[in-house]
Length: 383
Ligand code: ATP
Ligand code: MG
Image (tube, rainbow, N blue to C red; front, side):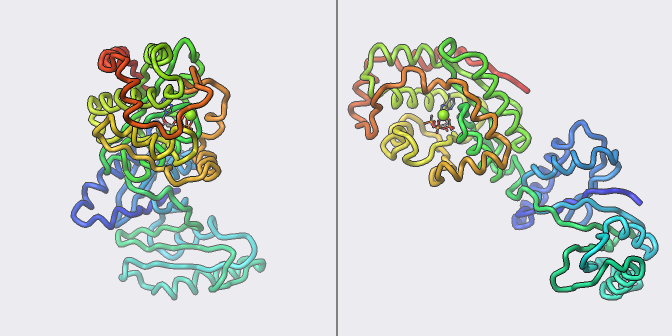
């Protein structure tokens, strides 16, 4: 009897002609997520099996599988030869010790001598005979015993379906560049696009020495946490210190944030193109702060041609916080380090800046030289 993890995939099967491609990406992603753990990955009619792993690492494998997009559900169970005695041995390991239960058999191999119903009755009967604390309830059982008789002469036995992360395999929806701050929102935005199958690269702006090394460390940690889902392992950092000093010295203070954001977008677009990313991703949510009005969004979009995806645009802050907690980035996001946007923050930022005013103020700067200088000094961290 062998302990295995059964993985069933999600939306992939909807993709018709592309199915082969989706499955290849999915299995590569599963392999990536299991890196460093000895195992075998098998594909068997519409599902994957992780086998040949050390039992002590089963929990860790389950945790990793739970973060792979495209996984619909997964189960820890046993693989045995399709033989009633061997099946019952495995059943005893997954069956509850008390309460109500139901045996639920799926028989893919119609050559197996008993029908699904007969297997249910036989196995259920044996469990009842063995343990008087058990009772059958086929309508609302407290526990289940699932038996899956496969075509290849084996049977899978398990007790639970755990919900997977859903979504689509990362890499099947091209690549995007996430503008990641140290805040709560942008990591969640990255998570959401990765969930839709996008490869996510990370870009962070800092204002060293106004912001410190720890702020960068914090973003690196967030990128690491996200990479457990998004699987990409590169963070690009760019200093916007000189840009902020120039804006501060020469432009109307109420436009500080607006102008800085336009610089961020221009720089991000150039880096995105060099990394073959097809869009920018931000954690903006409509109306959350002064720069996240439709006017603010319009003014930043105006300087780029790549699409800007804002998956949180319609979310309330508390909804975003809930997700951040669920994906495990919240505790790191709330660590108190400065972000570059809080340096030189004006007392009254413009809420609905006029494009003509923005362009007039920006005209006081050598935009192209500043962008080139920033991009020229980027740093790349692989983790
Ligand atoms: P977050 O919680 O992601 O920091 P926020 O609510 O603080 O977002 P803003 O500061 O207005 O909002 O930033 C909006 C978006 O701009 C962020 O979600 C992020 O995508 C991007 N951004 C802001 N600051 C930075 C930065 N220092 N580096 C990279 N991207 C940034
Ligand atoms: Mg922020």
